[in-house]
Amino acid sequence: MTIKIAGTGIGLPRRQVSNDDLVAITGLDTSDQWIASRTGIRSRHVCQDETLTDLATTAARNALEDAGIPADQIDYLMCATVSADTRTPSLACAVAERLGVTCAAADLNGACSGFLYALDLVSCMVQTGRARNVLIVCAEKMSAHTDWSDRSTCVLFGDGAAACVVTPGTMLKYIHVATIPDTAAITMRNDMAGTNPLARDIEPSCFVQMDGQRVFKYAVSIIEQEVPRALDALGLTAEDIDYYLIHQANKRIIDFAISRLGQPSEKFPINIDRYGNISAVSIPLLLHQMRQAGQVRPGQTFFLCAFGAGMTYGSCVWEWE
Image (cartoon, rainbow, N blue to C red; front, side):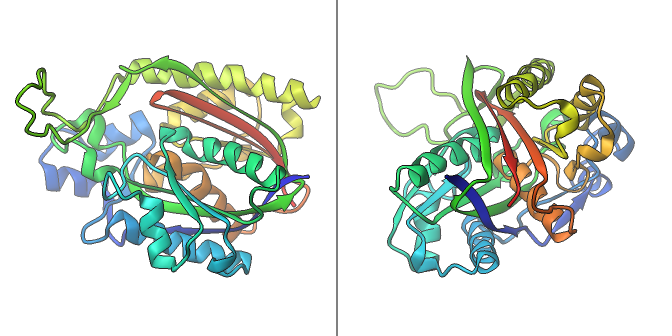
C-alpha cells in the first residue's frame, strides 16, 4: 500500500498576459519571437487583485470536490510555495482558515521541486498510518517577486495554484528526492531588512535572480541522472513510460529530454507555452489539465521530474489507478 491521487483542482488568475502584452506593459527591449524561441513561452497568468491565498483556496476546493471528500475529512494540509502572502502565518494556515478545517497545516519550500517533495512526505504519512486523506496545494505568485525591468527573468514566470487530494492506494511505485547544494544559481532574498542597528550587509533586492546557463545545465543533468535511476529501480525501459511530466521551466529543457530518451514528443506534454514557469505548480497543473482532456487512464505509467533552486530535485514513477 502506498498512495493514490483521488482528486485534482486548479486556481488561476483571471488576467492572461501574452508576450506582446508584456512588452507593451513593461517597455522591455524584447518580442514575442525572442521570448518564444528561447523559452517556449507565449503567455502567462498574472495576479492583479487576487491573493495567493485566493488561488490556493480555489485549487483546494476544486480538488476536494473532484475527490468527493469533505474538507473536514482532511488529516493534513501541506502547501508547497516560496511566495506565500505572509511570512507567517503560513499559506497552509490561511487556506485552512478559508476551508474551515483544524487539521495540521504547514508550508514546504522545495522551490520548483515542491510537488515531488510534498509527495515524498505525504507518502510516508499515509503508509505509516499517520494520515489517511492529505491535501497538497502548490501555489506561487511569482509576479510579486520578479524584477519587471529584467527581461532575462520577468518573461519566464507566471502565477497559479494546483492541488491534489492524496489517499491510500497502490499508485506510487518509486520516488526519490535530494539536493545538489548550490545556493547561488537561483536566489530570491528576503524583502525585510528590518531596523536592527547592528545589522550589516543588508541586501536591498528581493527579486528572483538566476544564472540561466547554470540552471539549464543543472536541469538537463538531473534528467540524464534521474530517468535511468528510476527505470533501473523498477526494471522498466523508456518505452514503458506512457507520459513524462517534466517541470515546465523551459521548452529547450524538455526538448533535450525528448532527444536524449529517443521517445515521441507526444509522451512529453507541455503547458509552458500558456502558463510559463509556475515553480512547484507546473506538474500538478499539467496533470489536472491532462485529466480534464481525458488523457489520463488507469494502468498508464508516468515519470515525473522536477528541479529547482537550492538546488533541489526529485523524480517519481506512478501507475495511475
